[in-house]
Amino acid sequence: MKIGTKILILLLTLNFLSCKGIAQETETKKPTTEIDFSDTEKSSIPKPIGIINDYGQIFTESQRTELSKILYDYDIETTRQIVVVTVDNIKPYNDIQKFATDLGQTWGVGTAEKNNGLTIVVCNPCRQIGIATGTGTGTELILTDEVCKKVIDEKIIPEFKNGEFYSGIKKGVIELIEKWK
Image (cartoon, rainbow, N blue to C red; front, top):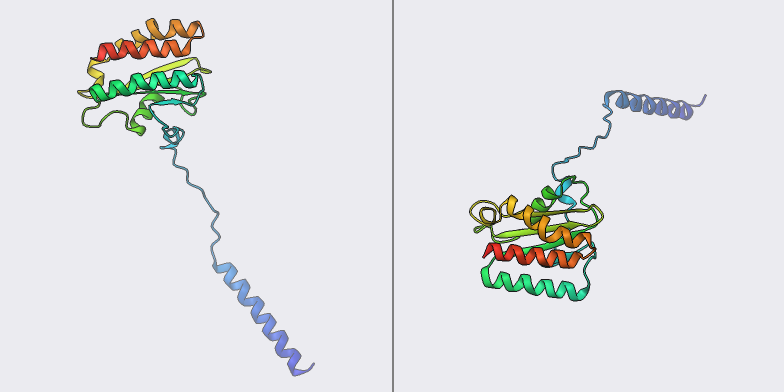
């Protein structure tokens, strides 16, 4: 064998052995994915588009306009903010009340120092409605869970049963405004 061939074989052998040695020294790590579920629910909350957020499309344009005027006028008069949201589902939530509370907090409904926000959420396909109030010395002390439940049961649900979603929400909003003055 010629010397050039022997050198080539030697270099290839050394190259092969050096690769094998490196491969044996290198620790193979499996890729892992860490998932943080702490914000999964909150990430499903839609972005606000105004004081009326009709994602479930249950209101006509004129109904949205009329309800917006009622809510904006009340906000200007009292600095209290009421937001109405309609959705087609509340997933990954199971509890519409928790969804409404998280939505109100995420959006910053009302002012933080006064805790004067109220969030009304309707999920028509789910057949659920929730009213979330600000906490502390604000809304929650006047519009208690009992008061909100009574408004839902006596003003909103009877209209919903007749298919009158706008009328139910409007009557509920007007009743809440009266109790909150």
